[in-house]
Image: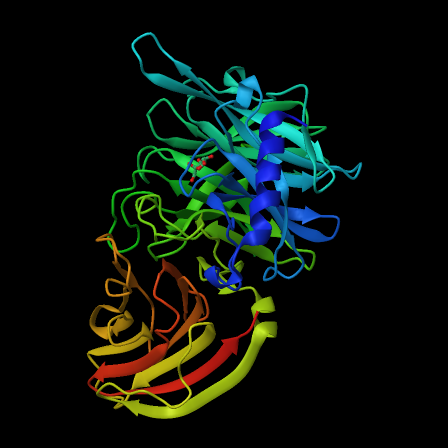
Length: 492
Ligand code: FRU
């Protein structure tokens, strides 16, 4: 085994067993030590679900990228496996960037990732060269392919940049291997290139699946492309997005393109576009097709913009979202927590038809490890409330607010008083489609709040670092609201 990988594995062996479980989320994956970002290689291998991740074991900040590794059978409990890849070849000496995985017919697991090699020019600037590389393994240990890189500058269409050519997502279909890869086109913005291969080792360029044309941000990172409910979906994470109404927030954002796949031209005919998640913390999502045929997505529950803002004393930085089941309805992406989370529901507290005006607490409605759905209607059918608010993770000092404003049919989430010691983006407003009734499901773990509106029509993820002692929940309305509540404690 090469030195850098051995060092990472030895480091994990030394430190992982020492960690105090109390520092960690109960059911959201972290690296336990060091830094993580994008989910990689989310796939089925020998009947289990594997997840790799962008990983720097030695510090809570981004560094030369390794691939950390874990697996699960239920998307909730993760078993940690040794670090899978480290930068140790000339073609990936500055990082093993994001990529994907699949099971080969011969039983090996194939990883496809971006190898990064930086070159310092005579004027002092550093240029990054990005190529696509392979490794194979047995689900625990991996060997890099001697023919690496398998895709480089020569394979790009005219104008494509070898400095921004990354994040391959592979799949097998109709007797061939396919991959989509993010690239920067001649116009300076993103395009998603499609490559094919007969054997998964020799690849060639096939088409440009979709192009940004400077419409949705600039470079498109981490593409994923799959059929869903009779359409095709392209997910990607654009950099440098400028805001568009309340749909797309600025900065590193997410984009879902729904359309028809033209199999002649190998091109996606765009029909609808939307954000994937409206929260402050969601990026670089990736999906798999589960053993029972569900399309399941996981993402990095963090924003690059705030990735320098951390809590002192935590031995890790970065966490994944709860995996979500995807579907399409009325031309939109629907996301709901994986149904497996329901197995971990314990005590149930429910209320029906509670009238809410001024702030109210309800007996038994509290907690920080919870799955809670609140359904709200106007108290008087002829008079809508002006605001309806849910306060969670609350004590005398700290609180996170979820607020519905019917006048413009938006939800605002405000974590500015959640205890985060940084003055960062703390508020998000996003459009919803509530009519007579609004349903808000909240999944809370130690450092997060994930919201699903109207059975998954909108999803929004937020990191909150509120101490778990702040576990009070209350409701208020400006006007009169009637609510039903179903709250479960989650014990994982
Ligand atoms: C997205 C990303 C990828 C890249 C990786 C590096 O968050 O920038 O494009 O492969 O992170 O860690």
